[in-house]
Image (cartoon, rainbow, N blue to C red; front, side, top):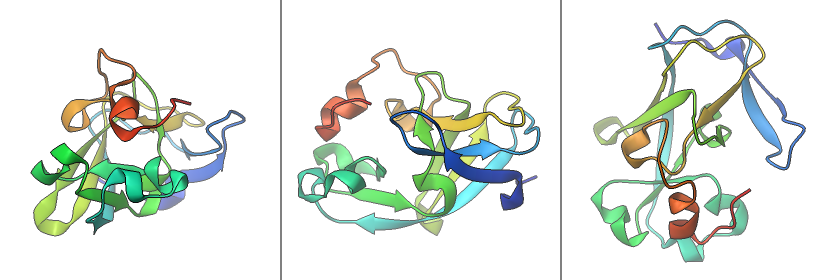
Amino acid sequence: MQIQPPSIIVKDTGTIKGRGAFAQVKIPAGSLVEISPITVINAHISQLPDDLRCIVYCWGELCRDGDALAIAHGYGCIYNHDQCANLRYSPDPANKSMHYYAVRDIFPGEELTINYNAVDGDPANLDPDCWFKRMGITQI
């Protein structure tokens, strides 16, 4: 079952992160929260404005050099980073989309987060700064 968009709202987090996506209903562990269409950008991360650097995903094997990036549409570009995120993401290159799944029960009012540092969309990673270092971004 995919969580329907009215079950998620965007609002200010009250932190330096700015806007975030928040659950309006309980989202059970394992639920497909969203399928976001993506747009592939064939540019190096260093060529992007700072605002875009903070929302792009590495896309496929080409991203090893930072040259194949993707912007997720929908809430996919709103999910903020958390070291122990409550969502994992999974790319679907055949359909040019990103799938987001709840890794645990998420409760109403809770922010939906992903781990930018994780390999292959996992919700946690031991190096808290690896994605930020690769992308040349100061962690927020």
